[in-house]
Image (cartoon, rainbow, N blue to C red):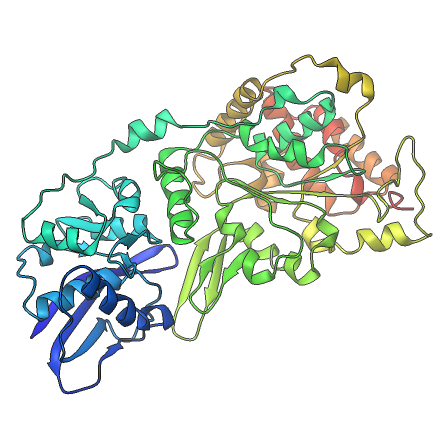
Length: 511
C-alpha cells in the first residue's frame, strides 16, 4: 500500500515542498531514498522504536520511503513524524482523510514524543495558501502561528497526532496577533547608555554611527569600556519594523537559534563571535549551507572584539558582504543567498601590550611592533570602516559619580530623526536608506561643501597625512553629522568633527 504525506525542506532562508511517499509490502530492502543526509537515514530507526512505544505495530514487510523531488538534498530530523504517519497509513493503522490537508514536520524521540525543529517560520510561509494547516511539535507552535491564514496545530507526541488526524481529539489552532505581539515586545533592551559614566566623546561617535549606518572601530587600552559601549549600540538604533523583524526571525529560525518565547525577534541582533571563529562559521556554509554570524547579525550589529586577533582569511571574507549586504554560497548543485545587512563595530588594543598612547602607562612594545600589529588589518577592510574612535580610560572621579547620564531613548530619538531625513533624501533609491550606503558618484552629489570647507578638508589631509581613501568617508560622516544637527548644508564644524574620526589613516599614528 502507498501513502503520501506532505512536508517541506529549507534551502537558504526559503522553503520548498517535499512529498514523502511511503510504500509497505515491497520486496526490496527497507530504505529511504531521495538524497537524504545521515540524519534523515537514521529516521528509520527512531521511527520504528517510536511507533512501537506509542502502541502501534511496525509492519513486518519492507518499508521504502521516497522524498520527492529526489534530486534535491534533504537534511535534518524533521521528517520523522511524516514518515511515521506514512508508515501507519500505508499499513492500515491510520485511516485519516485529513492527511492531505496538512503539511507535517517533527522530530521523534524514541518514546514517541516530539522534539522541536528548525526553520518553522519559512516552512509556515511556504504552507500558507497551499495547505489548510501545519502539524508540528507544540514547542514550535508559537513560531508557526506568526503566519496568518494557516491552522497551526501543535502536538506533543505521535499518538496525539494520530488521534487528531482521526478525529478522536480536538486541538484548537494556535493563534497569534503578529502586530500586537510585535509592538508589545518592540525594542526592549536590558542595557542602556544611562548607566555609562563619562566617555561622552565615544557616545557621540556611536550616535553618529547609528544615525548614518556607519561601520566603526574603537581603539583603546584594556578596560577602557569598548565592549560595554558596543553592547549598548543596538539600544540607540531605530526600532525594527515588522518586515525587518520577520526577515530576521526567518534567519534565526533556519539556524535553530530562535530564543524568543513568542517566536518573533523584536530587537536588533547583536552578535559577538570569538576571534578563533572560522571563515565558514562567520559567513555561513557547510555541506548543507547554514547562515553564519554575519547573517545572524542581519538588521543589527556584528561586533568583532580584538579585531587584529582574528585570522586574516576570516577578516577578508567580510569585504563582499559589507559591500553587497548579502552573501552567496555556491555548491555544485545549487546556490543559496543569505541576507547580511549589518553594522560592523570592531574594537582593538592600540598595540600588543595595550598601552600605546595611554595617558598614564608606558608602552613596552619593541619599535615597529605597533605598525606590524595594525597591519594585521588589511587596507581594503579599513576602507569599509567609516569611523576610527580612540577610547581613553575613565577617571575614578567619573566612575564614582554615579549620576545617571543621557538615556538610550533620548539618543535614539535623535538617531531616528536623522534617519528620516536620509529616507526622504534617498526616496528615489529604495536600495539606499542611510548615508553609509551611498556609492562614490552619489557622495559628490549629496555631500556638497562650501569652498571654505574644501580648503579645510585639503589642509587636514595634508597636515594629518590622511590617505586618499579617507576623503569619501569624511564626506559621508560629515553628512550624517549635519543630519543630526538638522542642517541642509554641511558646515565647517561638521567637517572638522568628521575629520577627527580618521585616526588610523594618519601617517604618524603608529609612528
